Amino acid sequence: MRMRVSKLVTIERHIAEEEHLARGATGEFSRLMRDMLLAIRLISRDVRRAGLNDVLGITDGTNVHGEQVKKLDQIAHDTIFRAMDHGGHLCIMASEESEELIPIPPEYARGKYVLLFDPLDGSSNIDVNVTIGTIFSIYHRVTPDYVGDGTLEDVLQPGARQVAAGYVCYGSSTQLVYTTGNGVDIFTYDPTIGEFILSEEKIQIPNRGKYYSVNEGNSTKWDDNLKKYIEYLKTPSADKRRPYSLRYVGTSIADLHRTLMYGGIFMYPADKSNPKGKLRLMYECNPLAMIIEQAGGRATDGEHRILDVRPDAVHGRSPLFIGSKGDVLEAEAFLRGDFPKDYVQAEAETAAK
Image (tube, rainbow, N blue to C red):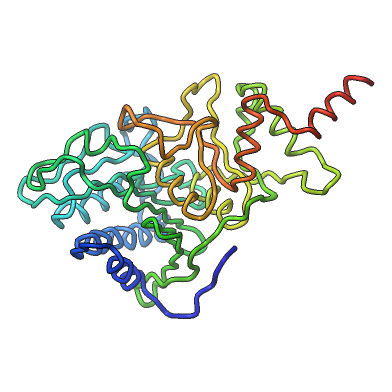
């Protein structure tokens, strides 16, 4: 269910109003988000002008994952760092593009928050003008010293402890999808006034959808039960609920955003080449899971709730099954071999022929 808005609200006002609901709020979180929004505006500008600014293509380097770094990837990473390093709100940062944790420069104050971010999700789509985006996740630090640097302990927290999570789609418009644990709201950037305006509030994902999203090019490396689930989705059913339609962009947040709005399931499963999955737990799975759960959906690694998984490495990976609650539960059932009656009956009829 999508609830349109009847009032004109900027994101700064929205964040300030939400902060008043929090006991003991000091305004520090609002100021942190103000800095983050500046970075998002700058990245959005660079994305819009990418073909004119010589920022397409790759750099000479690779990131911690062994992937070639796109020029715009590096620009986005540097932009977020420069916007967030001096506000006094953070004690540590971590980025998908950085092998090590990112300390706050010594000349600046430390704060009580931790920021994790994927500066530009969907790098493989940068050069072909397909939707890309930014993902971020905010935690309270767990080490008690608000003066000293943050530590690995502050970063390696399960997703259930997130204070806020969001993603930005740089597509036909720039949209920020955002939650602080009080529902999911969408803000659309109006470049003529330089403001993010609330465009849809308290989004609820349908319990079932008609779309599935997965890279079927990897299907030869999948578990047999996953193959059966995908074939099941493509098989027409008597109640007209199936077949599902495949939609796959290859940018996680683009596929996730469509799933959030229309329902269905987005999957990035483990396979023979990536037995632990490929998406990063801390930078992608956790923030996306918080958003989907706040919208009434479900996010798991196929067995366990994503937000309950305890990370063991900053750049650790995880399988991801995320989207409408009914669809994700059905996928989990297939993965453990608990097939629905109509599937079992159809298999029996096929075997009898």
